[in-house]
Image (cartoon, rainbow, N blue to C red):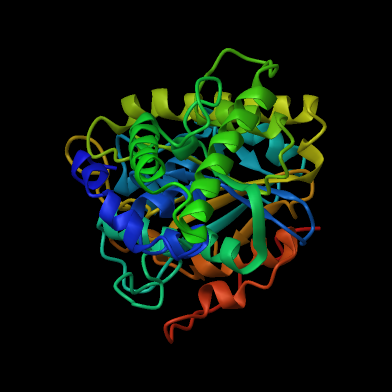
Length: 400
C-alpha cells in the first residue's frame, strides 16, 4: 500500500461508509479489502489445508523437468540444457528427469507424493509479468472484467464459503506474526489512525459507527491471537522465508485452510544457470523444512502444496545465456494424498521446435480440481463468471 493510499483513508471516507458492515466496506475501501482478505476463515468443506506457492518471474519448466535426451532440447539450449548427470529420471517416463537441484522434489516424487501437470497456461498468452500474475490471481483471462471487481479468486472463494477469521492467510500480507498480527506496519499505522480519529470524534454517536469500532477492536484482538498462538513455534530448520511463516501460522491451529506464499527471482533472462543454482536449492530446502515442520505438527497428512508460475520461458536460450518470456509452464502438486506422476501433456519434439511451449491445460482446470477434490467446495461460482468459459480438465486425476 502506498503512502498516498494510506492518506486517502480519511475520516470522511470512514464516516461515509459508517452504515456498512466490515464485509461490505472491504469491497469499496482498499484498506479494508486487505483486512477482509487477510482475516477470513473457512466453514465447511473437507478441512484440508492448501498452500498456494506462487513463483514470480516465470519459472523455466525445462530447467525443472527436462527432456534431457531429446535432440531438439539439446539443440535449442547448447549451454543451458541439463545433461543426464544433472537430473534424476522419473519412473513413469525415464526420458524426462527432475533437476537434481530439486533434491527434495525428487525425493517426494520417488515417494509418490508429487504430481507434475505439464504445459499449463491460459489462452492468448501475452508475456507480461504483471498481467499474467493478475490472470492467475483473479482466475479469469480478462482481468479488466467488471465481474471480478479486482477480487482474487481465493477471496471470491472466501466470500462464497468462508465466514470466520483466519481461514485464508497470506504470509506477505500478514507480516511476521512474531512481531505483529497486522498485514504490515503501513497498514497498522493507517488503520490505527483512521479508526482512532473516528473513535475520538464520533464514538457512540450511532450504532453503525459503534459497529465499525467493534470491527477494529476485533481485528486488534485477532492480531493478538496470532502473536500469542505462534509464540511457541520452533522450526526444524534455520530458514526464515515464506514457508517458515506458513508453518509458524499453521502451528497456531487457527482453522486456516489456505496459505498463500510467494517466491521471486525466476525472471532469468541472463546467466540462468548461475541464478538457478541459488534459486532452486533455496526453494527446495525451504520447502523441505516446511514439510518437516508440518509433519512435526501432525498436519502434513492433510496438506497439499500447489506450485505455479505466471508463464514458462522460451525453448531456445538467448545469448546471455538465459531464456526470455514464454507461454506454457508446469504446475507441481505435493502432498501425501496427491495422485503422483506426470499429468497434462508431455513435452514433445514438436513442442520443443516451437518458440514457446504451448499450453494444453488451462490453469483454472487445476485450481478447480484442487478446490473441488481437495477443499471440498464447488469451484464453478469462483471461475465461471463474466461469461468466460474454459476447459476444466486438469490433465489427469490429481488426488487419490
